[in-house]
Length: 138
Ligand code: FES
Image (cartoon, rainbow, N blue to C red; front, side, top):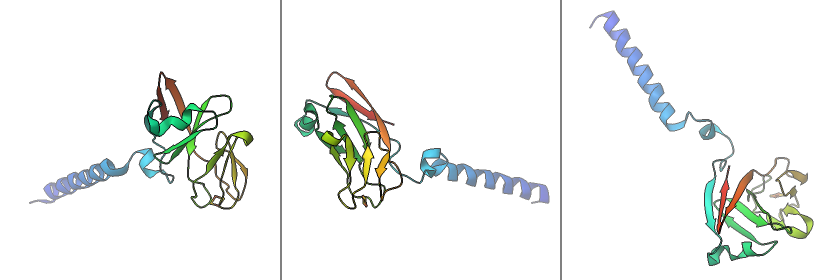
């Protein structure tokens, strides 16, 4: 093998290594520090497991997301783990907010911090209702 052949093989090897590494994690989401940003699932509102969403103020937890029905009947969804230390938040329809009982952080219905000690917002997800299917997605 001469020098040119060797360098050619080396170049191919490096490219292969990069390609292999990228298959596992070159997308933006894979490098994102917060997990759960790629959310896309659908709830069948006819299922008993989702019956709470038939009532204003009701909630369902699924896939790390809290889905709530507001006092005005709209569906909202945010990540369910408090950004302070990960405790599951609850929805308080009367106060129109999410609340973490661990240290008292509160978040708006859009997930924005309204009271610490949390400093980072909950991730807000989109919702789309079609018949009895409620899609939650990012
Ligand atoms: S874990 Fe939620 S406020 Fe501390």
